[in-house]
Length: 71
Image (cartoon, rainbow, N blue to C red):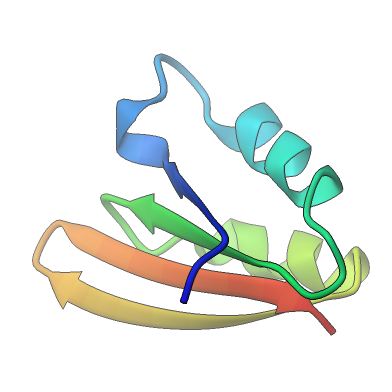
């Protein structure tokens, strides 16, 4: 179950800073669910560098769900 959800589709403009902010606020035991209209492949390297694990699922043609947790 997600402790926090960020729907990048609702962000006006580039969502990267919103994602980073959400990651910085994530407690060690919490999960962030990121919803996006495409698979956010460029984000995966950033997550790895910052010590996060992720699991991605395509739930519709235009919806991707990424669960992010501390590694």
